[in-house]
Amino acid sequence: MLHHLILENITRHISLDQEEINSFVCHLKQKKVTKKEVILKGGQACKYINFVHSGILRAYYLDKEGKQSTIMFALTDWWITDMFCFINNQPAMLTIEAVEESIIFQLSKDDLDSLYIKIPKFERFFRIIFQNAYIREQLRTIQNLSLTAEERYNIFLNKYPQVAKQVTQKQIASYLGITPEFLSTIRGGKNKK
Amino acid sequence: MLHHLILENITRHISLDQEEINSFVCHLKQKKVTKKEVILKGGQACKYINFVHSGILRAYYLDKEGKQSTIMFALTDWWITDMFCFINNQPAMLTIEAVEESIIFQLSKDDLDSLYIKIPKFERFFRIIFQNAYIREQLRTIQNLSLTAEERYNIFLNKYPQVAKQVTQKQIASYLGITPEFLSTIRGGKNKK
DNA sequence: GATCTTTCTTAAGCTACCTTATTTTTTTTA
DNA sequence: TAAAAAAAATAAGGTAGCTTAAGAAAGATC
Image (cartoon, rainbow over the protein chains, first blue to last red):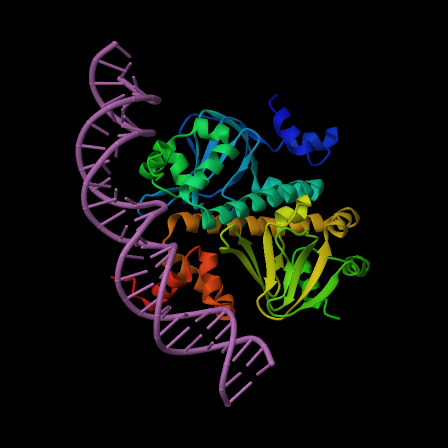
């Protein structure tokens, strides 16, 4: 049973008895994905919210010119989906793929909706999850507006050292909103002075 | 009684009986603020989450060089606070001020926490509020990463026509992450060709 | 209703970051 | 383990957006 991690993630915020655990767990779809496997493709229906049990996933937006903008990385213990499209049953704007071989648990929109009704404590749980996600995203906005690329890169390295080790610089650059060439220049220290 | 708007805002997502309404309303502090009045100053304790009954507020980050970055505008029917500092009882990073004379309702952290316990439906309500806030903020991140200033300006005009009418261009520029001079250039159409 | 302050515009010179291209290094795959 | 593919580094030239500054317009204040 691989459920211990996701249950620990949840019981960090709410407590569940055995029966509630069972009725939650039975909705989970476990999935093993290989490196570079795409679990959601832009344009498709976004049916699931995903919990990363192990490995690392990446969500990105692909524009008309083919440029990728990385919206988030999710490693062990994180939740990830195209939230707008998941909630509103719209075709996905984002693509989500595995950076490394990963194990995830998927929960469908319908199952989540019925979970909210059957076990209202999940409202609290996801209220906290969304609250944190909002705060993180807002902080990122502040940094995007007020800092240089080099400052944002250094903050990224400090905040997500594990991610920095596991993903390519091209992917980090697309998270920071700069080209890989310019990130390389920053790393070389050549843009100082 | 000015509570009809805030109650309507809430009952759009959850239903409340009269007793619940009463026990919610009694926690609200009504406040009238004048144009340019600051309701939260960077560094201070952020005690309240604010509902805008009328008027328009603006939250911004002020960096060491004195540059403002506007995080959000909140007009009638919106909720606004420095969420990170409100939730974590930290000194505020943001400053919130009234753009125009406004009437707001304030709810303290302690009152909100007890409300979650007393009326768990509020977990659902704020789960939805945060969910929407997160989605909005993430969409903004995508746009910040992938679009030019001019494209972001046009989207802003379409998305928030009312805000565009009520705030200065300097404030819009600081929301878009550009200088007022450059926004003026964009508006003049001089940067095309 | 005149003065003071702030906002907006315009313009010239500048810089952070982009584009394109080439080479080197690392990773993937047969 | 060799070949192919992808990532990273380096460099030259280009552009979106910044800085500084000065004048015009609009708002605030007495």
